[in-house]
Image (cartoon, rainbow over all chains, first blue to last red):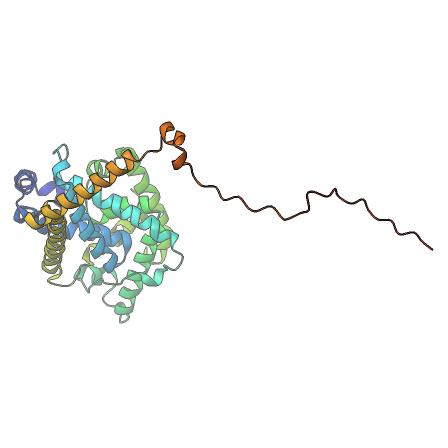
Amino acid sequence: MSSEFENESPTDADEVLVSRAQSGDTLAFDQLVVRYSPRLYGMIYHMTSNKEDANDLTQDVFAKAYRSLNRFRGRSSFYTWIYAIGTNMTLNFLKKRNRRAVWSLDNLDSGIQNDEAMVDLAHAANPRHQSDLNELQKKLNEAMQSLSNAHRAVVTMFDIQGIPHAEISKILKVSEGTVRSRLFYAHRQLQGHLEEFIK
Amino acid sequence: MNEPEKQVQKLIRLKRFEEPRDGYFEDFLKEFQSRRNERETSKGFLNSRVSGGAGNRKWFIGAGMAYAALLAVVLMWPNGPEAKQDASRQPIIFEPKQPVRNSVTSPKAPVSIPRP
């Protein structure tokens, strides 16, 4: 699968920015924030299904990365490193949230905009397509939240963000086989939740 | 990959189009910079309190000297074996007074009352 991670090769530029940031250049770190905040926010948002949580967690991830930047030795790429920080912090956050009984699916956000691809899939000819869209979005979020945190992480990174298996295995520090197996079981579980939308 | 699995993937990929409002990431950067400045300011403030200007240094030297003097007094306070030999330094023990009894007379034997 081709992905934005494969097509884009910001590694060299990242190294330069990281090196400048390590020397105290805050503007260089700001450029890294600009470069990676949309992807990190997306990953965290799809993991939590909550905008406020995603915003706070993404801020915390960059703050932690900024504080720990001098410990970054460049053994992995910067995005793998910051994704690993983001994933760990999000999984810890979700563990705590799952322990809180008051959290419910009502807290899930619904923010899909009327994108063309979305309209096509939800049968634009259908006069009830807007309610279908809302229903589909609700079902998608519920289906995602029904997955375990580990399964949701691989679905988010692979299916939604297009990160290759090899990169996911580096981020999560598990084998590629584990990534593939988690994806397989997650897809099977999602089929059960979304069968009404599958022809 | 079977057909239903492909369709599940297609559905899940729709979540790519869930995006925050326009301008969100510009605001995100501003928020990050503002939080960082706050942290740097508070860190700088703490550093200045610890290793700061001449005024603070004077306070730290004064506090250090006072602590050293207190420590010296505690260490020099006599509480070793010599101190025990000095009777004047024996702790005063207040013993409770014995109840006043007639210790001269022998205790009386129980009196038996003859019955009529």
